[in-house]
Length: 244
Image (cartoon, rainbow, N blue to C red; front, side):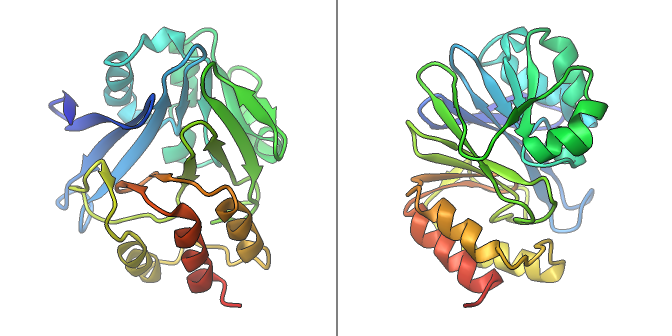
């Protein structure tokens, strides 16, 4: 683990081949119980950052990216849906990387991003694949999973990494970068305190579809990334949030 920003304690760790977790802990004195905000950098010919982080975290996150590759080389600023921790510093990134464009789903581009961003988005269709070089990212529309009409998720095919956004959100600020330990129970305990799932009629269908990808790594936005049988874990989550 490499600490990049001493003031924010932001760290950078490679959690799959060419995919880096950038994580900033929020201590308990700032948020009860502690928390963390993660971004995922895919280093390639056309680099992509997934989740921008809040605007106030831009200095720490951008310094973390610079430890891996030039910030100005970013080609895509990707995210699942429109919230501050997903895309709060989107325009700061677009300014720092003149060739970059927002990367989001078609609904997100239509209802928010093409108005909020300083450059038009690359609006990904459901199932569309984006070539970054040796990495390939497939886009999945997941409306209302876990929340928000514009929600979507991305799957990096070569490493079988699912960029799963707010799924499996774990509390605490001292989570290891990558774990094979159980994340379902702590994430469910956290969810039940303040349920952030929409519980759409399509929730189980979306989770089942994601499970069929057979992901080996789950790149969670809050807490540890996870390695293991992603298909089984996604179906267990479906049982919890959308009982058959």
